Image 1 (cartoon, rainbow, N blue to C red):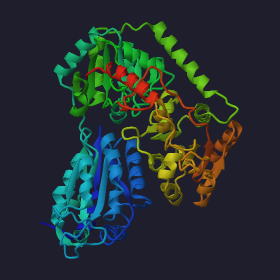
Image 2 (image 1 turned 120 degrees about the vertical axis):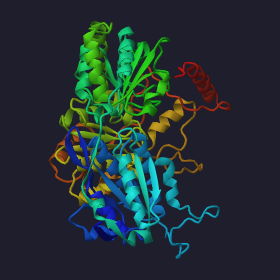
Image 3 (image 1 turned 90 degrees about the vertical axis):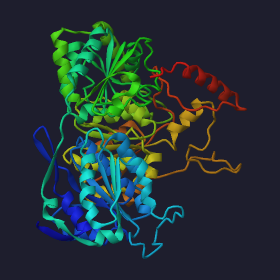
Image 4 (image 1 turned 135 degrees about the vertical axis):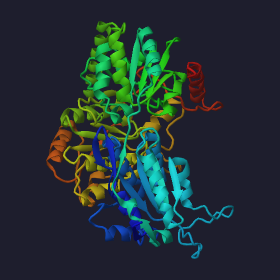
Amino acid sequence: METVRLTMAQALIQFLDQQYVELDGVEHKFFQGIIGIFGHGNVTGIGQALEQNREGLPFIQGKNEQGMAHAAIAFAKQKNRLATYACTSSIGPGALNMVTAAGVATVNRIPLLLLPGDIFASRLPDPVLQQIEYPMDYTISANDAFKPVSKFWDRISRPEQLIPSALHAMRVLVDPAETGAVTLSLPQDVQCEAYDYPASFFEKRVHRIERQMPSPAAIKDAVELIAEAKHPLIIAGGGVHYSGALAELQQLAEQCHIPVTETQAGKSAISWLHPMSFGGVGVTGTEPANLLAAEADLIIAVGTRLSDFSTASKTAFKNPNVKFLNVNVSSLDAYKTSGDRIIADAKLALDQLLTELKAISYRSSHAPERLQHLKQAWDAEVNRLYDVESEAGLVQTSVLGEINRFIDEDAIVVCAAGSMPGDLHRMWRTTLPKTYHMEYGFSCMGYEVSGAFGVKLAQPDQEVYALVGDGSYLMLHSELLTSLQEQKKITILLLDNHGYQCIHNLQREQGSGSFGNEFRARADNGQLDGAYLAIDFAAHARSMGAHAYTATTKEELREALALAKQHTKTTLISIPVLPGTNTSGYQSWWQVGVAEVSTQPSVQSAYKSYTDNVKRIKQL
């Protein structure tokens, strides 16, 4: 057997460089590069391997471990999970910074390979710098924290262990149902140890992504279920994008006259102009979508995990006879709501449903005139929200309207947390698929700037806009510098409302006052209720080398957007907006805990409302 003597790190890099995926006969190189920050846990191992093999996987220098991993997630999501970047860090704090990103990847079902350095397997330099000494189990290091947020985890304690472990890592990464964060913990001494690896380990490997066929029995049951439904409703999730089922979704809606609603991950699966498109559903949904959900006698959930936001904490479906049909490649998601299920690839499942439903000439009983009225009324409401004016300053809904009207049809918007996801899910008008990139599985603050950089890596010829609040920007903006370093221009639209106003709204809606959520100075009374902190975000961005503007009027915003579009490097536009000028409501409710006992009458009232709503929860 022919062998090649390499260090474990060198072998790992060569292996990753030869991994491909195939879907529908088309090959895609799976790893497009490595994003990393070097430290004593990886610089002499993986760092040396990358330096030695410069003709292989390109290296991108991250600025924050969480941020660089977010960029890798965004890249993979934009590529429909057919390509990704691996991320490497040092041990201890550098590794732990990636744990949050691992949670983002796993919850959102996005492939992410994490390669954190680890303490010495030999234990000779003990304790090593940044080592956590856990006295009950000396085999534990900081990297064990990745276990609950990873779909596969391993520690490579001997160089030959890389062979089976790397193959298992790929098994999970390319599996549509099981993908998520994969963590290979790499002790820093083992990274540098040599082994005679089989040459075959470094041959090109093509991992074929097999579309899971639906069973005939499942299709038969589903057709019978749909045939009985008079007012079905489709909820399209991210799986519609990942399986490439956009055409089948639209054909099903048209052929069977079934309205389509979308989760955050599913948004842009169908154009807002389509007569059967009714926008977001659930807590951040549109009024017509939530009215249709309340009346539906059948929910056809395609490629969605049906989170509490999509189901309005299980209160969205008010028809006492409502049934559920879950179409999902993941059995975990397909079994939710105790409904009927088709455990299969969404594209294949919808295609077979189309054939069978056409054979029986199925068409829902939705009145076309009512659907048209609902759609027209909502379009008028969005126009109203886009045009709201206030003498006190800019209104968040109208700022988003100006942006939506200005940017190109194929421009991509990226968001993740705060009040903007609700406004965007309800109001944002998309005509082309994959132009709406929302991380809302984890709703991770700090994803926006890093995610926009990752999306730009994936789609370098399209304009990419990061829509971010001041709270999220302050939490994590480090990959702004990486976008400049890599010459990948993004436009950051920073809506400055002086704090964590989304949670501030939630706090007050549940009966509490204003406490701890605004960026205010500490006053003489010892409380954080002094003047708003004055933060010049444009100056901050300019200090790192970006173009930057501040827009305080709609005219200034239009001018800044036009200038940003002309620029070839990253640009930030700081946009002060009035707090509390976001959307809310529209036939939805979200369950959050409310204090059962309180001296505050407003909290007591909120708890009464809470208990009334809890009674409405449909036990699914």
